[in-house]
Image (cartoon, rainbow, N blue to C red; front, top):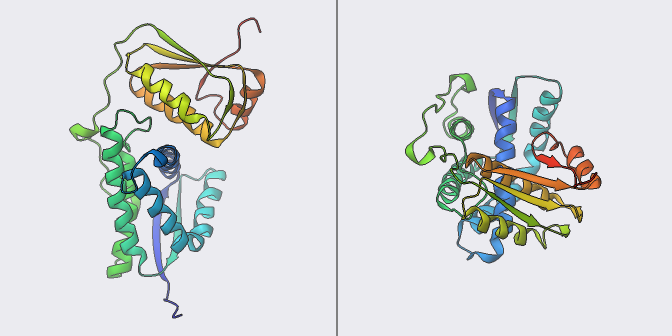
Length: 266
């Protein structure tokens, strides 16, 4: 097999906070698409997205692991920006374009799918994504000099399709009592129940998790995306949790994000 020479792609002044936000949003999208894929046709957006990501990881993932680690170290050291260098084969340019087109399709899917919890990508993160793709394609295909992030045009005015969802005018409270384990096998049930409640336009949704003994990463992902989606709609999400689950959410770094309440009488 002929080995292709690697090309260096230099990213200048990568904004660490924005990179973290973009990564978190991408992970939320992937979690929800993973939940949906079994019920969707093979050519539907969730299946095509996850198939593309798996293919890109197989082809390029191990090459870029050390570079992503540099960004994580920069974050741990409190740096605001970082310069990093990727070493990739020339086909990475076409792969970057394909990923960009796929993510635009995913955004439209999230925007128009009322049954989804994950929101379309915020405008600033879209700009960051476009900058990354531009840098890979410009430098690989044309040998262009790198342009730092601060020189990139950032979207500040969302298009009508990107406009924020109006705040909820609903009133009243909906309550869900969920028991057992919140994991890959059961998370769809809770998700569907929350979606049904959203259609009734409540002022808040209360999820009673007192008798939940185990939550895996998929369950935690659902809580995060649900919180984000409802907050955009002006709907409060309250979680009633036992001490054991509260400690798990604390260790996951979510204690300050989610509105947690102790069981009555504790």
